[in-house]
Every structure is written in structure tokens, then in C-alpha cells.
Image 1: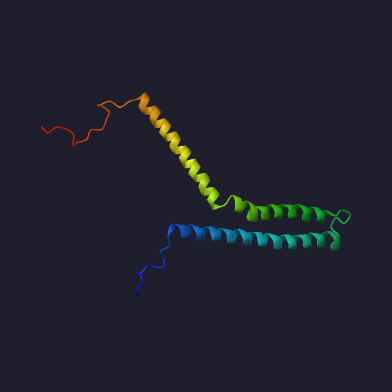
Image 2: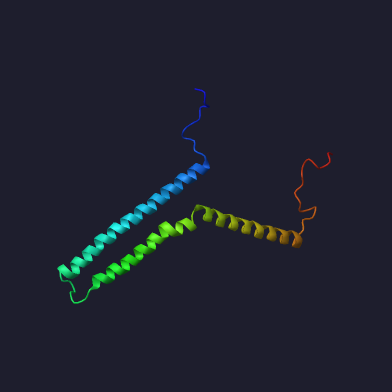
Length: 135
């Protein structure tokens, strides 16, 4: 009543980016939790196959499976919870801005080189129709 009628569907760009980032983080964490559940199920299955079903019983290969898979899980955990904190959205934005600045600098250098090597003469310049004298 006293407030401006603002469309609730309108979300400014920053809020949209925050929502996308939150959505991506939730997906990452969900994948990590799924990985952990599969790791547990796979480890139990490997143990049962090796010891209970007596598949290649003379070797304890299930330990290698659990060790390698556990290492991969630890790397996944580090990627989700540690690396993302240091190399998150702000880091990506900074890197993007650095690259854009670098490209703009190179374009300016190339343009300057072209202007010095091939200067525009009056013949090559675009003529402004408003500057021409009237007949």
C-alpha cells in the first residue's frame, strides 16, 4: 500500500549470481555426499567379495580398493571444501578482469602500431557529410 509496487520476480544481477553460486555449491556438496555413500557401499562390497565370497582370498585386494578410493574421496573433499574457499567466485572474477585488461592492452598496442605504420590520409578517412561545403 505505502510501498512501491515492485515485481517480486525482478532480481538484480548480484542476487542472481549469489543464487547461482549457492545452487552450484549445493550441487557440489550433494555430489560429495553421494560419493561418500558409494565409497562406503563399495568398500563393504569389496570386503565381502574378498573375504566372505572368497574371491582371490589369498590377497587382501579390498584394502587397495578402499585405500585408492579413499584417496580419491579425500581429493574430492579438498576440492569442495578447501579449494573452493580460496578459488571461489571472487577469485574467478579477479582472474577474468585481469585477462580482459591484458587483452585491452594488447589491442591498444596493436592499434597504435597500425596507426603508426599505416597512417590514415585525408583520402582514406571517412568523410563526415556535415563537414563538406555545400555546392
